[in-house]
Image (tube, rainbow, N blue to C red; front, side, top):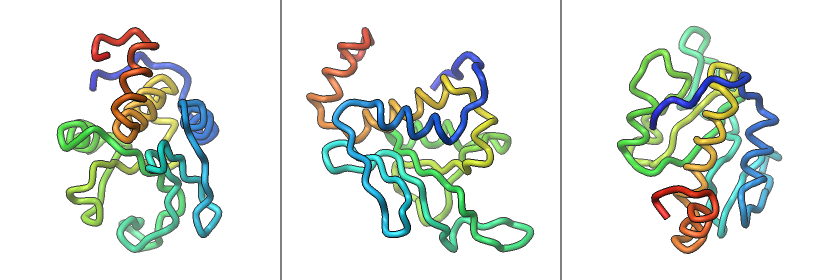
Length: 144
């Protein structure tokens, strides 16, 4: 994915707004009240509860601000996590899973436009083929 033009820094509110703004989206709350955005019953963005696989390397404390975004596949995942300066990461728990992680505390390191692309790609990776085609056609993309 080519880097998006730098816009204002992304915020947590943007994740909610962008995910909820995609078509046919339902927001459900996880057991801990964490937001889970779904299309056709399939999650594409969710706010993860603290887990033992995502911890501060210095303190061992579990991250309490991890957001999971689905991606189109391994190539997309690698592109987002391979740069050590990237705010996107993964853990062994997500090996083989088409998703990347991002701490909310690092959202400001990407622009809102880049976040919009990440959310749109997440939605496209989980939407039905017809919904994906319709959305791509409506947005003038060559992939439609």
